[in-house]
Image (cartoon, rainbow, N blue to C red; front, side, top):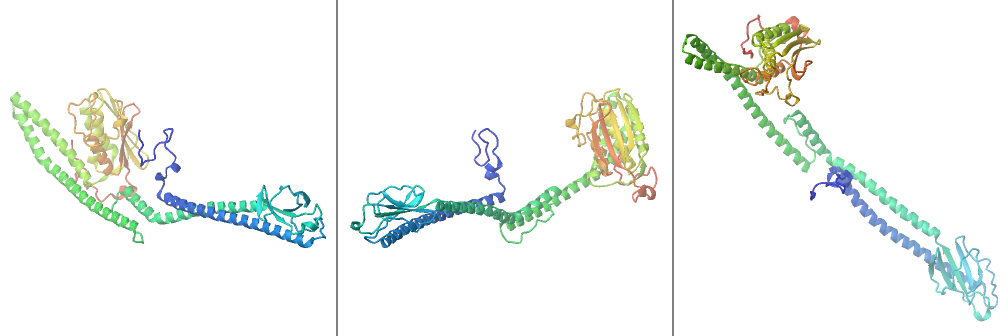
Length: 507
């Protein structure tokens, strides 16, 4: 398979290559610093090579020149010191240093005299120029003395040699200094590149932080920081600001449309209840008066459809008003009484199930009694609908001092984990072989439970009960002491009086 040329690509063993080996995956500041360091390294290497070569050549030339000059001066001194007819072959008194040696040779190339430890350089032509032999720089010069006046072993050549060890050490220190300069300069260029890149990327980092805050809060009305300089980053910031302004306007328009739709659905559902109630009453009256079995069967079908429609409209009305934020009047209620009433109401419809209650506390909550009644009734109805005959269903009520907890547990097949995130969605159905109701339901029962709980500041959850079946739990905040003592501004004046905006239609 051919790797994508733009991507990092796998290594030879099929594994992803490390980040350091894939510069295209580096952050921008790293790449900027890397380019700066790379260019600086190349420039410093070129400069170091040129300077090192020129300097080492100059040192070698100076060393060679000095050696040749000293050899020439020695030859001149010997000529002056030992004139014709008075030549002393003694070597004493010749000027030499510890790193240099002198050799005097006769016409046959034999050594007449030399300094201690002088190596044998062989016979060299007396050119006067210095040549390198091993670790020595050697220059050979003739002694200008009348040969006729000399005895047979009189020196006619002088060899002056200097050890190159100190020179090579100096050149080595020079190259070491240049290499250190290249490395140090590259490191400084890298740090400087990172500093410049960080400074250059700081406006981008500010834009990234602002974008992250907007993504977290989902609030496009937040402002984008504007850089001080008018450059490409500033242009990007202005473009993002314009985009967010357009998104904010679009969101406001969408929310307005959605809110209008919610208001319409809530109002339409409310208005539909009256004609449906009238139709249902008339159909019930006709059912009493009709004696024909065929007509009675048709009328029974119409009555069933009308009841289901009224039930669906009631569910939609409750959800629509919850979505629209229409909160019904609330007062402090005894949660145990409301839950027990819902259980009592369901008993006639669940004769094939074993219903029980476990009331561990009698908490008081600030809520709409009809909505909480509907919540408990839907939980119990859901348990009856989705468990086989003979199943046990338990209604539990407890309190931990700040929260009231309503639980409905059964020993049925339970809710699969894959469906637990969906059971509170609207029109979600989990029909199975354990369902005992003839009608499929509207799929809004648990959605109403979730909407009522959230509108009261609570939460819902589903899990596994201690019986092995499903466990639905609702947590509601308890009424504050101040509310229990002084009431609530939306408190109902008396029990049994339903507020105008109550969102709890009966089943």
